[in-house]
Amino acid sequence: MAKINENFLNLKESYLFSDIAKKVDAFTAANPDKTVVRLGIGDVTRPLVPAVIEAMHKAVDEMGDAATFRGYGPEQGYGFLHEAVQGYYKSFGVTLDNDEIFISDGAKSDVANITDLFDQANTVLVPDPVYPVYVDTNIMNGRNIVYLDANEDNGFLPMPPSDVKADMVYLCSPNNPTGATYNYEQLKAWVDYANANGAVILYDAAYESFITEDGLPRSIFEIEGAKTCAIEFCSLSKLASFTGTRCGYTVVPKALTFAVDGKDVALNKLWLRRQTTKFNGVPYIIQRGAAAVFTDEGLAQIRENIGFYQENARIIGETLDELGITYFGGVNSPYIWLKCPNGMKSWEFFDYLLENAAVVGTPGSGFGKNGEGYFRLTSFNNHENTREAMARVKALLKK
Image 1: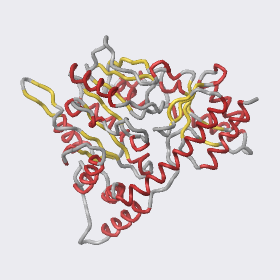
Image 2: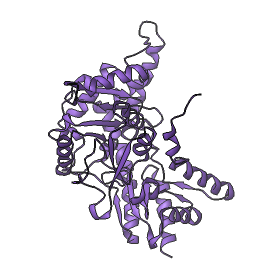
Image 3: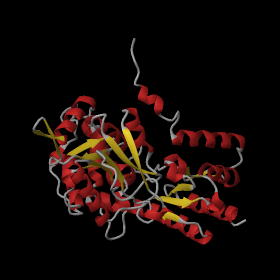
């Protein structure tokens, strides 16, 4: 008789955002006269920029011509996109080899799939609150997970523990859900911890394009020593509105090696082997659009979109300041992590906001125990809806 992977039974029965969707659907069905403003999920609302659309249209024409048609492409991505990513990293002082870059269908997939490279016996260190995928994928594999407290006292930027020797460490900066962002000195401490303990940092940089303040690294590879201990995951979803188009990339340095039976084994080679076996690559048309993201024209157009979301974050922050509500993020991040007013619990505030203002956010407790009593709002909407949502929140909470 076939046996299932019983580790799946240790997962929560449903995903956080599925629970939210069910509650919102029930509310809208019961209140068809009310317009719900959604500031919950991190789904962008600005369309693909003209440079990307032009490149994709050209690629579609190529696919319709026998002379330029492309069939199966390299699983790790086309060279032209590797070169575009290399150029982007050079803009903030990081040099990468072409074969250290792996093109994927998004950071979420790679963050989950990278666990294929690691033994089940590894101890995983995860800050709490945390993006649920980090936790769930390791529960599926039956690994031991140790949680590191991220809270108001440490600005939701926990530092390496002195009493835990982890094998795999998940870091996200700018952070989802809190919006908190590590500086160079803080990341250097993590890199030193990983190198001292033979650990791997799985570094989620999906929101690096929102960093505006000086003194904050865009990549962990800006930190000395990171190439011997870190893997970086990046996404075009928030950078370039690719949430529905699906493209990202993962950087696995060739210097990241582990001794096995007296020989150094490079994770870069293992990841290439994994991808060529389990992944067919990102479509050519999508990769041409992705390459256009990193042109001067594409980046200029994309910066306008990011500025649009940053203005929404400013509107949200301005309202919270007026209400005297403590919050984090919103400056170098599209997320605003606020303390629930009047001592409310996270889901209690979710229900209160939905039922009385028809505004949707994300309960902080869905990201871990340290998220209890907090609430995440996103700047991914238009200006009109953001202002309307904040007007409703202000009217409700000023009562």
